[in-house]
Amino acid sequence: MARVKGSIGSKTKAAILEKALPLIAQYGYAAVSMRMIADAVGVNVGALYNHFPSKQHMLVVLMSDHMDGLLAAWNEVDTGGMTPAQKLESFVRFHISYNITRGDDVFISFMELRSLEPEGHKRIEKKRKAYEGVVRQIIQDGQTCGEFHVEDAHVAAMSVLGSLIGVNTWYRAKGRLSKTKIEDYYAAISLRSVGYDAEGKSHV
Amino acid sequence: MARVKGSIGSKTKAAILEKALPLIAQYGYAAVSMRMIADAVGVNVGALYNHFPSKQHMLVVLMSDHMDGLLAAWNEVDTGGMTPAQKLESFVRFHISYNITRGDDVFISFMELRSLEPEGHKRIEKKRKAYEGVVRQIIQDGQTCGEFHVEDAHVAAMSVLGSLIGVNTWYRAKGRLSKTKIEDYYAAISLRSVGYDAEGKSHV
DNA sequence: GCGATAAAAGAACGAACGTTCATTTAATTG
DNA sequence: CAATTAAATGAACGTTCGTTCTTTTATCGC
Image: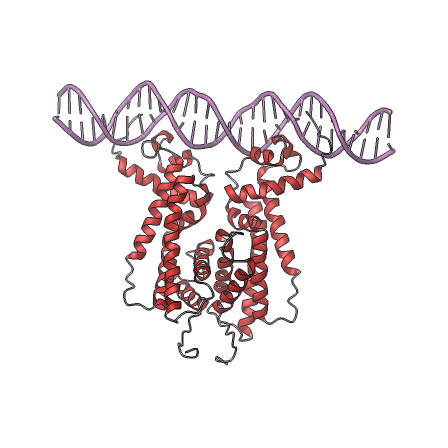
């Protein structure tokens, strides 16, 4: 056969990314072959190269798109007029929610950095740092205004992010806890971890 | 050539594990070939099969040995007579210290679970759960005796572990922070995150 | 409707993969 | 010291890998 009826390049390209994502999340970039991806899309291996110059480039697009989406989604959250504590809670809820609905993306972006060649690595790392910076800035603001009490804002930020990223190593949709409960718990844990006193009085 | 002078099976086997570890930690199991490992050891590919029946079996040994060592090392820490808060602090310091000196092992054991075939996966997963159980038990004890205040001991345990595991994604030996400082910070963060009140008075 | 182009199939490329095997030589045993 | 065993080499196995290329056909612009 040759070109199939109804095939449109943009649709196929989107389908490739969509199918490649869960495969790479599950097996890892190196363990997923182009043929596996092609089979999942329902297309011949060679067809993949109509849309991506290489497997490596596909990973970069996958991770870059995700990080852009993640940052854009966070920027759409309105934190105007919020205190640092409220911002941190918003961030935690945002990240968990995103983590649960788009778990594969998040997982890949934090796992497959090592699979990236230098140029791609630099690009993605920059976006990742920007995301880390969001948390760090919130914590620094909280420390400045006396709402938080941490030893080191950078360490505190990495600790919060680490605990959040860990969620999708154990979260299961059918599990004991609802998404809302998990958000509630992590919001409370994160706020405590940065030395936020919920009562707001005993230390003032 | 054939058998080389001075070659002893047990030494070669240990050398294989030693060299394979950092390679897999850096590039991932699937991305490391048996030839890469053999080259690192300074031996021919075929020789690997004198000591391991397969690449997969090698990974299982690597991860199994590590988890056993990790659990054994923790069991050697004397926590007799400690309060849950003291135990949690001990655990955090232990894990960070272990993480920093044996970072590759820890990293692989939490990253390459997906590379394990069913039998091996079950074996390692059991050990991993045991390690998770250590933290959960400490937190549960702390909650029972009123020293900690958490919404859910399981979630709190996964949060603490997640934040700790995150350390070796950013820790660098030459970095801004000493190992001791990092231990100090994470101990404080972890205790706060489980609702431990350092002053021990305002809430009693 | 016809020519240009986009999008697919399918075969083929050399390289690398995990693994096996015959062979050679060092170390060990009786 | 001879026989056995342990441990390595180096070549080879069939597969699979990422990628390329030719061919075929559908879609799009004029």
